Image 1 (cartoon, one colour):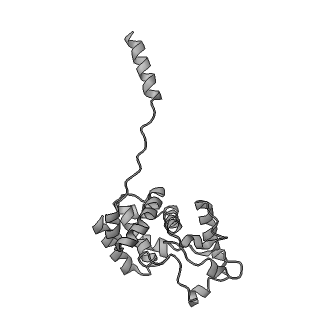
Image 2 (cartoon, rainbow, N blue to C red; image 1 turned 45 degrees about the vertical axis):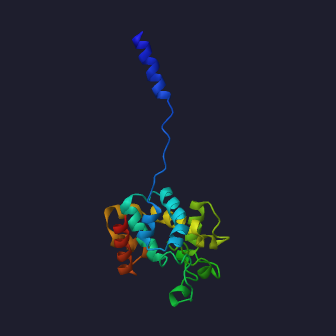
Image 3 (cartoon, rainbow, N blue to C red; image 1 turned 120 degrees about the horizontal axis):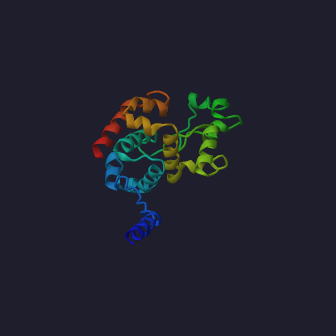
Length: 200
């Protein structure tokens, strides 16, 4: 009889529903504001979008979050610019006709300028982001300027370019090169990283 009871109990345990998955807390609004240096209104406006994007793409834990906030903070001028400021400068003029960026049609250089918290640039970049995020950025590239997509595209780019792993290794210089291609604005990035680490 005891064997039968044990068998029934073992079957019940196997079929018992899994415990509900509790969403990760990430960091609170107060820490987000302190880490980014944003005013209260701007922090409240950005927080839900950055939080959702980071949770979607595994940017969790103090190390990754601090590095991400520092880098996107620099890239966006403190969360102020989600569209590349256009002169055009000589460098921006060279976007036009760049096959490596996929800019093959007249006007592609300006049309597919850098957008989002990490500046997605070029027709190829927009095509990849469109496919990954499930939105048509080729038809309406300005969608990347809006907070939800500005944050989500940055988190997607970060994760798909191995930035979580580089952040985990603590190699902030390599992380900067991965994002920027060089070390442009490195002192500001380092300062933002220090602020974020202290806040978290």
